[in-house]
Image (cartoon, rainbow, N blue to C red):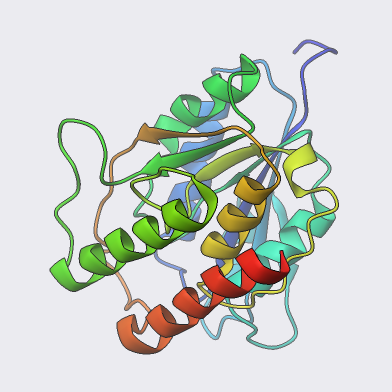
Length: 232
């Protein structure tokens, strides 16, 4: 491991993901062994009622448990505050993201071609065929963000991201739930940082049930986009 390697912090928000979080951590470790980066993996448990914390701790990574259920956005913000890395990665704990594709996100950062890299489910030769309602909502959010900020992205709601610490510094994030991705993207774009996307795989969860409500959370995401632009 090179002393000059930037420290990489991987933030994994988790809520009732006992069936998948352990596998995600194992695969992250295996992927990271192929790099020469000094790394820390942090699981931010959002007050799970199952064995998520126990499973994560068995993998010998840093685990922080929130005292009450606060939402994905709050969990990510907690992770950002505790992360020590010069590069910060976020990856979902439900098994939908492939840790093996991490290098796709890191390469543009390490080569100083981007400040934020988003793993897109909808770009590339084989875009993800997910729920039509959700995909349509993402397209609407993408268009609004492009009109407001000029940032052209195909997957503004992806939680698989890599970014330089400088992107988060002096960035005041307020979201507590799923609107965190939109808030970050709008505020980062407004500050003129270089944003890129890279195609990634996406696998529908096989365990548990998503807590995302397309109507309720979709409205919050929409409001977050406009609020972040006006007050960002």
